[in-house]
Structure formats: structure tokens, C-alpha cells
Length: 397
Image (cartoon, rainbow, N blue to C red; front, side, top):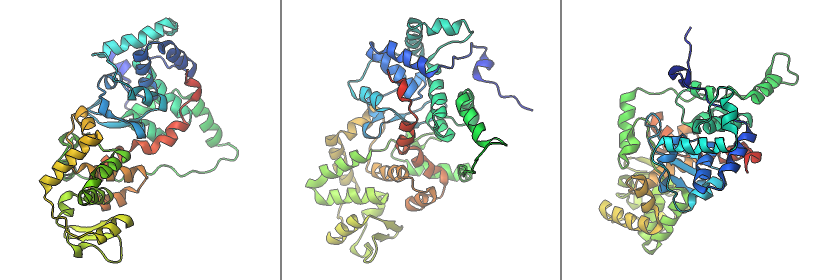
């Protein structure tokens, strides 16, 4: 029999305090007069971030309309998207705050607030400590008690192993009591529920890694085993298409790339005979590509040939992205921005609308689920409704 020890047991540290909602509320109220300190506490609790992840935030990581944050190179060199409540997103949208430069600085902020409101001393007397991780721990426990699915909590926390999430949620006694009352052997009125479907089996590593590298060739950092692409938000793509309206052919090309998820190299050689006459599809040498009815209509009414070269398309795309502010956001993240970002946006938006993975794999021409899964992880905002429903209103100061 193998025993799993917590990190605290392995290194001999004092166990972390398990904060209640009232205690989190008290800490937020205490931190509120200091704007920077208050934002740090909100990121730790409402976002479930680690201290180091707070320090690494850049202005371009925030997707305002989706209330999402892109965390790059977190623990284990893993990228992930997380969700935020409206107030924390609003605070982040204001001028960038000068965060500290070390985990110790974050720890001092949290310990100072805990000391000021008396929680630090109260937990120390019990042999427990309060740290930035206490707020991350509280995020998991309180969301689980409020009904957020275990898989979503694990996803938002960036855990690779379910056992790591169990460590955070084991103390959710209220959820355990409710589960027993509903599902125990002698529970009254218990009904069977469909369990979550497991992910498809993972393919062998080498071919999938090659496909991933080809998929994210414009963003090498995303081609890492645990990397994710930076994707334009839906409103950012809309601004790109509108900004390109002065050049109708470019605007239609951008729209076609975005609604089809095709590569530019697939669409540029298109001829009039490639536009299907009966269905909203394009029959290209590389395969069948689907488009929406409106784009299909516009394509049939256009000359049918682009007559454009890839370098000039990329140059115009860069000008438009600069005018809309998308280029500046990508620069702040240290990610290159190319026309293929429209393909990335297609994958993420389909995932946000809960498309089934097999259909997405087919539409994007993937052979391996791992590549498609990256897009599923780029659309955290599809869980906003569940996130908001399980955000405890009474915690707000």
C-alpha cells in the first residue's frame, strides 16, 4: 500500500490554515484600503492563483470580455486560463499595479493582513499558518462546497493529478454531508446521475508532439508539452474584421479564416470552382472546409480569387492588429502575432460553445486528441456561468 504525503508533510512545514468564508471576508475587508494589497488577495482567492503566478502577470494576460486570465509557464511550466469575478477583472483593467518582485513580498502582504485582523495569531495558537496558499486552498474548498464540479476546480487550479485537488477539497465537510445524505445506502429518494465522461485515451507521444509543434508553429512557446496558445477574444476578432473593412477583400479573407479555422495556405489558392454551389463548404485540394452561410454568400458574390500573397496579407494583418490594440496585448505577453491567430480563435470559440471534441478534431484536421485538447483549455470562459453560480456573494466585503 502506497501512502501519498502532502508537500507540507514532506518538507516538515507548519500545515496551512483552512480559512472559512467569514475569515476570507475579514481579510478582504482589512486589505481593501490598500489597493495593491486588496487586488493581490482577490487574485489569490477569486482566481485560485499561486503567489508566483500573481507576480508574473502582464497587462496582455487579461481578456476583459471573457473575464479570463492567461497564466504562462506556471508550476511545472504549464500554461492555463483561469476565471475572475467582475470586481477583480475591473481592478485589473485599471492602470497596472507595481507588484512585488518575490514570493516573499507576496507572503508579507498576506501575513500582514492576517496579523492586522488577528487571524494570524489565532491560527498560530492552533499550530497552523496563514499564507498566500491559504487563499488558494479556500478558493477550492468554498467552490466545491458551493457545487462547482471537481473537474472544473482541478482545471482552474492547474492540477495535473486528481490527488492534488483532493488535498484541497477534502476539508469540504458540508459537501460531504450532502453527498452522503443523497447517495448513502439508506438515502431516501436518491436518483442515479450520469457521471462525467473520461477523456479519450491519449495517443503515443512522438506523433502527437510533432502535430502540436506544427499546429502552434507561430507561437513556439505554445508548442511545449504543457503550453497553450494566446488566442484573440471574440470581440478582438470582430474589431479586426471591422478595421479591415476599408479593404473588402482582406476583410472577407479574415472572416473566412476565422469562421473556417483553416490555415491561410489552404485558403489563398482558392478558385471559384472550390466554392460549393449547394452547401456552405469549400472543396479545397487539402479537403472539405465548412463556412457559415453568410460567409459562403459573400464568397460566391466575390470574384472568387484572392490574388494575394502571404507576406502582404501578414503585413496588412499586422497593421490592423496594431490599430485595434491586439498587437500591443500580444507584445506584453511576449507572444508573436500572425494571421494563424484567427485559426486559434476559431478553435477556442468552438470550444467555448461546448462543441464535442471529435467534431472539433475533424473541423481542424487534427489526428491526435492532445492537439484538440489545447483549444478546449483555451476557453475557460465557457465555465463562467458555473463559476459565478459558485462564487459566494457573502464573501464580498
